[in-house]
Length: 237
Image (cartoon, rainbow, N blue to C red):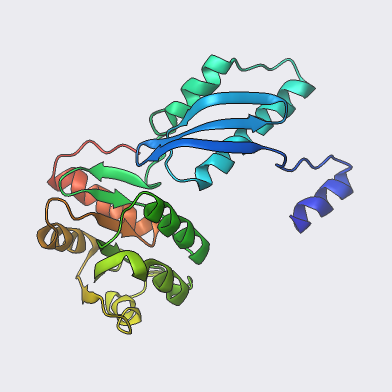
């Protein structure tokens, strides 16, 4: 924010920050969130945001605030119908995937690209609100990330951890990742690859026990590629 303020000052440009919006959550699930949302002078009743997780509400509010700013400064307009259609089909319209996405039902497999401590905190909070816990975790991180902080955040909701390493030199080894969990009472193992980790997670999971794949864009990408190939799934956000 400090950088943005400085650049705006240098260019004599106004800085508009998101504020003053109000939210009432009506329903939330892995399919998305339905909210009553007020942004500026605009009100949206029962607005369906197809990306799940409460942190996505703020992102939607920012998008709506941007629409207001552009509309006030130009002849550009978006109808209420278009806004609702867009926010209800974000994944289909953009191809965005891996954001608290349920990509398989039996067993339930959730993927999320949380790759830093803040992202992991947000992910765990969202899962707790949805009552999802005691899951099998397929987890891998990059060398430049704060692995310990991420592990401490996700440990409370994991019953078992399968540590993995993505196919990149940036990735921490599976053994290093597994070692970060050894202070807890969680069952921990290391897999030879992300695909092997997902295969083992499915093998160890009952049809009801949820599986969470997270820690890195690379890990989630390889997991989705494996599932699409081996299970002949149609992957959606």
